[in-house]
Amino acid sequence: MIDITTQKPLRVVTGGTGYRARSYLIVPARQVPAVRNVLSQAGIDYWVDELEISVDGRPAVTFVNFAREVNPKEVQDELDRVA
Image 1 (cartoon, rainbow, N blue to C red):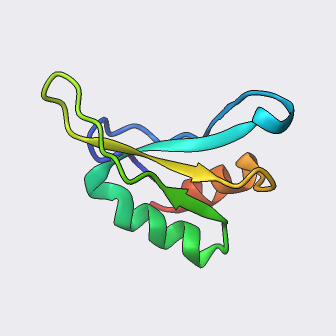
Image 2: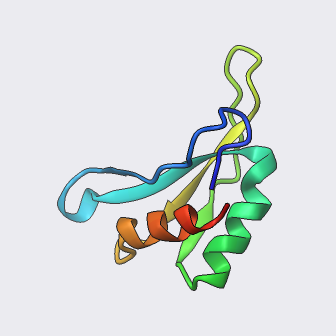
Image 3: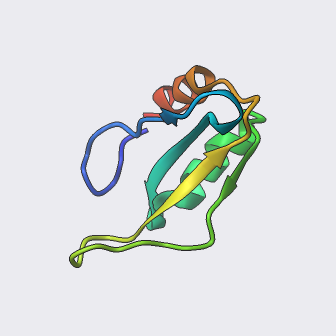
């Protein structure tokens, strides 16, 4: 799936280790419904932050977070399937 503001692929970010290990996406706020659709259809467990962030007048973004047991590679594979 391509980021509508940068025209680059959306990439799953991973960080932390152990119980702090998390993966997430930073998604343009306008693109959240499309991302939710892909994730829901794939049965991926996620939640979307309530807050949107805009810095220096750039388009607002929000975070889509994944449960610890979700494999980040599987999320990325689903996103990469979308044209």
